[in-house]
Image 1 (cartoon, rainbow, N blue to C red):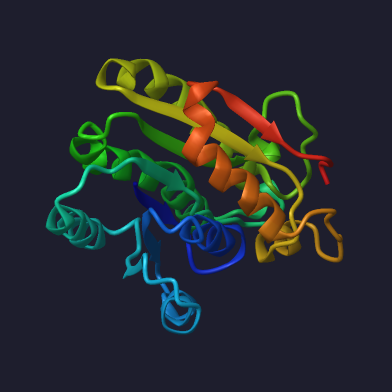
Image 2: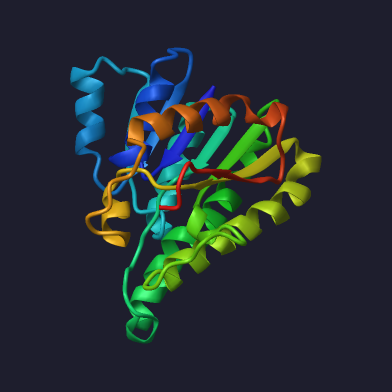
Length: 232
């Protein structure tokens, strides 16, 4: 399988790359703005089925290079994991237009555009799977918290996009699902809830995501699935 994951250099994304690489039969394109940890994984971790790609998915030129990389591999794309995310923790009235646009660009517009660009490769797979990584903060009916209006609303938009694409891409043989992640001890969680200690580590959540990305289409399509033992 050819698998592409964004936001792959740290936290849940990095651990998911490690989990997927252990199966040995997959080639993982690991996308991040900083690939130092990924390069180290390849050289010292003996993960030779990981291909680090330095790219900012919010920039058109970087997306063009990413598409060219996949074209050069001449393989169908089987799994796309939209994991990259951005957060701002600030009172609603103090969030600037620049901050709002940055959050929505990373969390909604970039996955939207990336899926568009990668459709030709996904359509070549026998059973492609797009996995959007959302948050319990964007899950309808879940607890909401002050300061996270930009982040949570952007993740809600990603969930809505998932449901739309699942129907539209079904005739093309592409399944689309969304995992609404709960509290995991990451840098992003620390920004949202300083001092809070989550019950799960990135490695634990990554094991679930990796398995779901590979086998989730057997049971799900167009679903927003809460993956949370606590919020927060």
